[in-house]
Image (cartoon, rainbow, N blue to C red):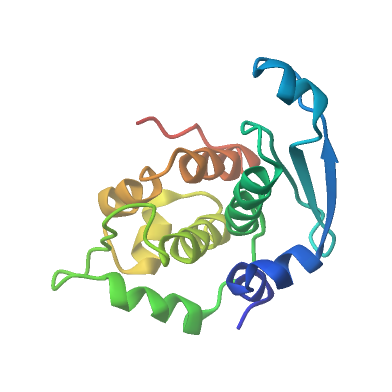
Length: 171
């Protein structure tokens, strides 16, 4: 199993143990309680260097849970790994009879690992969507429809495209 997937699948306690946790007072609306308690949470994932924050709730407990969820997403979005044919085979569970990739929503647990693999493939093919789709055994349209299921995945695809001098994808 890849390092990225190990971090993603770690239980909350194990993932939190790999992070440096900071709490602080968030600014903005929320009344007196928000201005008097350190409810905002910043997580730094030490092995990867990723940083996420959550400060929208007045509850530190709620913000910590949101930060952990955001860290899992950030791990899948921002850490690229070399292409692994065995990992790409895991996409088979999400193919229909025509070979198209399908996910009910971005909230399906397997969506984020699959999105990471699609982004890895896109980067491996120098951000050429048609080449990435061919390597994944699907159509360009199907690859784009999966990438646009979550705005952060779409944004990361465009970051990869800029890196290789490609024009941004448009929805």
